[in-house]
Image (cartoon, rainbow, N blue to C red; front, side, top):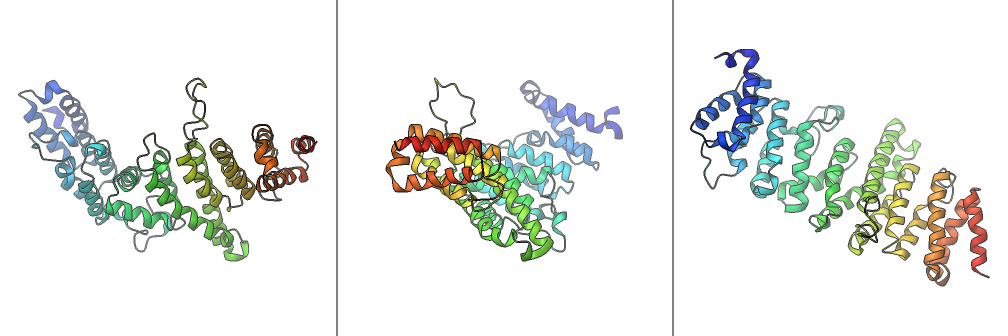
Length: 388
């Protein structure tokens, strides 16, 4: 048959996968022959053919049996695959059925993959002898991306031991491979504030290690005398990671959800549980004194002030530096001054009735007014009027 000629085998694989994906063909008298042909293509010497056939990796068995899991059916095939493009396709098929899989078997499979050459990126550090630039986490590698998605879910939703332990190890040393950390943070985003709370506590526990490590490393990393070029790279990585996490907390607050006021009086994330997790973490992130970190931290805290006005005010005052580029930035000033104006109108007792609230409010007002911001100077007069 012509379909077995070298240039047409990948197209044959595409056709077979499409046929077997249709119930009418999968249950037909010719299904066994179709699967046999697809299995042959899945073992083809050409990676491009194997990659196309791998889109149907879950369709290869004639009768997998009622107790057979996806992992038990495809485990050996994936563990022996060396081509990264083929491996990416195979792992994506498995990732698509994670909710229906046994978390224990899937976690054990990732541990086995870590012991294979193609899974070396799952080890705690870069493969021995390779520079950090050679890590597959450096680029948007599809294999690493898919495994990160699987591993984070297994860690925070299922508490699977290998995945949870490996994730904790990586996140406790976020600057060892900043690209890996940023990829993992992306995949933890859905669990920051899920509607049913699934994985939220475990996610914040994992992220606390990142924040504490970044906060501890920042003073030395930001000091040019601490490490020369290395110190500069560490400072950049620390700021980028802190910026990403602050933005994710801001998005998770729900303030940017496009919802009708009739259906949602406050953002979905404005709830005490999320605020209790997020506000202390944002305070710690605020220790990274960099304008690109400070702004998303402040924005997230302002969003959370709806549920915790006093806690948010103290956190904002703690985060805003007394001087420097942040307080002289017009956008930052407009953000904070609008917040202070609302506080004075909606929470007058908090501002004027407590020593802590008054001290925090005055500190913020004086920081921006001292930098000459017109909005802050105008607010000074309004603040003075409040005492009359």
